[in-house]
Amino acid sequence: MYEHIQSHKSPVTWVLVADGKQANIYDCRKAMQKIPLGGANKHHAFDEKPIHELVPVPNGALEAESINDYQVGHDRRGTTSSSVSSVHNSYEPHGDIKEELKRRFTEALAKKLGKAHEEKLFDHIILVAPAKMIGELREQLAPDLQRCVAAVLPKDLTHYLGHELLPHLQDTLLEAHVA
Image (cartoon, rainbow, N blue to C red; front, side, top):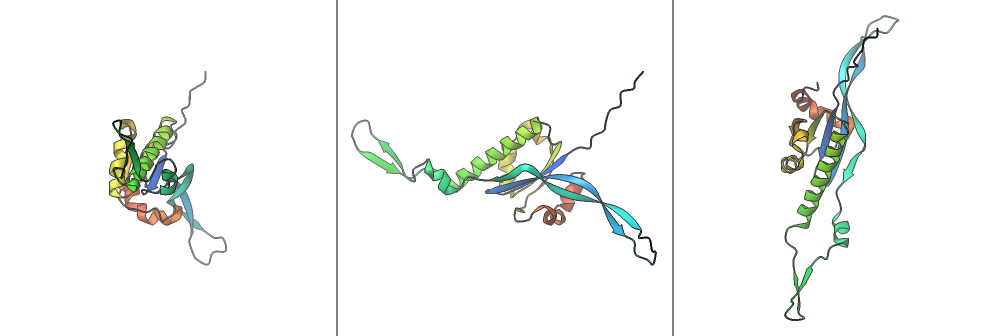
């Protein structure tokens, strides 16, 4: 008789680092780092210390649509016509184009994360973005995906990449129980 052995898979934690123009998604992994233990011993002794690594997720770098790309399909000034006369009136479009682009980008991020969650690519996610964007992103996330948010860091850290991010994320990783 065979015993069914269930493999134990460690939970996968993603880190989303975003602002209104760009985003990078990382897989946060634990690794062991060997630290040399000095001394006069001919055989080098090492101690191992657990560390985190941020590995870019394939297709996890995203950029928002530029103003120029957006304006290709939209007039800078809209036109309206009256059914009573042949007069055309122009008007300024409502809202700020930059805000519209940020909104569309946030929607695209939420969709991408939602699809990845449905495909079970991650178990938990840490959101790192300016506070306003985090609020807007959370509004776009499906309820089951909102429950996967392990921690939030309301800062713009998009100018850091992978290993440069880790010192800024240590407290957040502890809060998310990833440490």
